[in-house]
Length: 281
Image 1 (cartoon, rainbow, N blue to C red):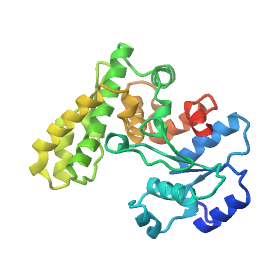
Image 2 (spheres, one colour; image 1 turned 120 degrees about the horizontal axis):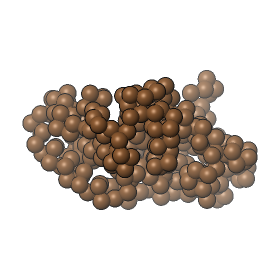
Image 3 (cartoon, one colour; image 1 turned 90 degrees about the horizontal axis):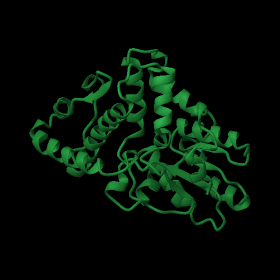
């Protein structure tokens, strides 16, 4: 975050009422800002400036007004609703769906844009990109490509199903690193569903819920398999597991970190990315 003082909502209301031609964009985090900025630079469009929500002072009272909790996403949602009363507003407010679309109608407000998929990172989840990063660049030892992609997606959907089960059961679990529950054998990715479930519940001192939790997660997993996988994968998990595969795939592990993956994704963040048209429409 910049050392500059954060702007108040009143400041922004005045700014956009006096300059309705401005089409600034507000996002949750720094990586979101980097991706969109790269897209606009590629499109040679200097009119759009991207700001992280940390640059705006969104008081707790405003969050309570809209029955929102703490967090960057909630602050973007609150800002969008606070500015929606401006007659001519060209700003956009981008937020991730995360798991919200499975449980409720998504909030709608002037200028508010929900990611098409679970999160911004999933715009990069394409067969072509995966093959380029994992096989062409990193030279990982992959067997039949289609089988690998299926195993890769399945592991990510399993992780996502835990989040869905947690929300439905209202356990409010604190999550732990899942690296040790991943394995790579014969060119396929495996995720130890039972082991990770036990570790998470044990960490939260809620082992008494293990049976119900695993059953609910299994139900969600089956349900998610029937939809577009990009609607059932967390963006951060996608980046983390992709880095893990590259690091453990017996190839060139230079891209085997989350930061390296994000830097690589920025190289292909152009106006051709589906996200660009979503935010520009």
